[in-house]
Amino acid sequence: MSRELNPREIAERSLIKTYRKSLWNPFIASVKRYGLVSPGDHIAVCISGGKDSMVLAKLMQELQRHTAHPFSLTFLAMDPGYNPANRQLLEANAEALGVPLTVFDSDIFDVTTQVEKNPCYLCARMRRGCLYAKARELGCNKIALGHHFSDVIETTLLGLFYGAQLQAMPPKLHSKNFPGMELIRPLYCVHEDAIVAWKNYNQLRFLQCACRFTEARDASGDGIGESKRQEIKLLLRQLKRENPNIEKSIFRAIHGVQLDTFPGFKYRGKAYFLSDVYNSGAAFPQNGAGQE
Image (cartoon, rainbow, N blue to C red; front, side):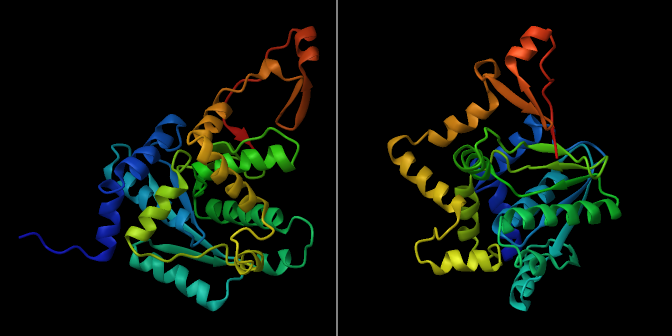
């Protein structure tokens, strides 16, 4: 008679059994397609306490168990100023799911709550910088973030509608401020709906953003509030009623940009006009990982 599995084992098994097609397979597709993990890597898996980063942690553990090319993992969590209940939930979930956390503190929430313009952008940039620095201190050469397929689509539309730019979220980035460090997004091909389904299947409760801006959105009652990202989520939901493949179409579009149909473009911060490129006979910049 087989023994009864505990909740952690059930959650792990469901990743490669129940949700193999929707979680494990697209995760592996991301890792292979974009060359995100190499033998000998020491990867800091960044844990915010939300559903995305926790499922990323479990998928990376499974990959480490099954790979023929060994690599190291450190599960890195930064406390930017969570209230005690949120900090406790983060640590309790990690312990229950068998994710050994390395936690360090910062005062990012104190800083960003005093900023009126683009506080979420500033928070994200500051958090990433702190994670890079701590990961490098711990001997890591990569940080892995939990951005998924849905984030990629939403970010692309946010840039188009509100940022006046055609800019996507690349699967990997080389850091300019931290030479030798790379950011990877192993959930690049994983849909958010699959992550939510796994969370609900295992009856798990994770942190949201845990800042006052998210709390204001949740208090609005419509799930949208003043968040532009939530507006994009609602728009995509409406568009999918008419075209269920709308997100897939956008995802394919960012992989097949017809650069010669645009009057100009930017590459690593420098602006180019196609007429100048044609007239000078210069070659187009080579494809590859982006920089930040």
